[in-house]
Length: 229
Ligand SMILES: Nc1ncnc2c1ncn2[C@@H]1O[C@H](COP(=O)(O)OP(=O)(O)O)[C@@H](O)[C@H]1O
Ligand SMILES: [Mg+2]
Image (cartoon, rainbow, N blue to C red; front, top):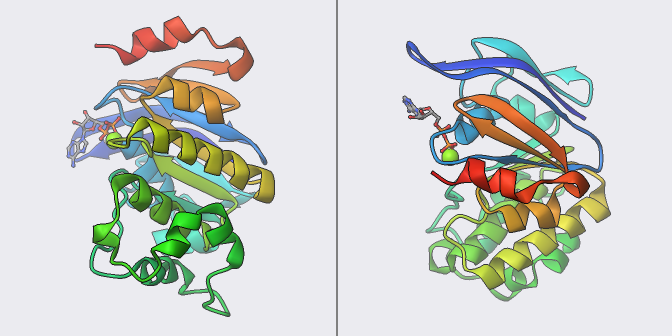
């Protein structure tokens, strides 16, 4: 569903990704694990078209999107929940979700969104900025989901969120995959969360994928050693 081939990405003269290749299959969740500064956000921005590729390709459901602007990538089936969530603090919860509906015919928020995140229904008239970090994360996921993605990208969704809510987010991601059979790619530093949601785990270090494992075969100590400084 998602094919990433030999991505090279640079900030000016400084190359940050040095040939990243992986794929995400339909109905599969993939975790990209790595410490701060290893290239997770750069990878997601380049998949989304927020940063240009120096070389390499990104294919979604057989369509090459490597040179498309972000809004075209969304139309072709990628959605992105950025690090730090980036919801609109002065818009209500409902209005925040509606910003994801700009290209839909009905502009109606589908019922299944509120079924996944009941707290968003309770808070639908509140301003996004008044929600807790965990609620804002759920809002950002809801906004991404209404674009009906085939591939959902989440950049460090557990960052700054309390443990009980992290469990809720893991449950929601597993439910989303069960309902929609989509591909989910999540970047993470929290191994327990990744083990709750991912079928395969990769480790990114210095802009390269240096380790890959299926969940069942995961050597957690080894992954932890990559994650500790
Ligand atoms: N705007 C930027 N300009 C220059 N270098 C950057 C910029 N953003 C990130 N980098 C560099 O790119 C590398 C990867 O960063 P990033 O993708 O943000 O890592 P992560 O998300 O894993 O913490 C780091 O070395 C970082 O310093
Ligand atoms: Mg980051």
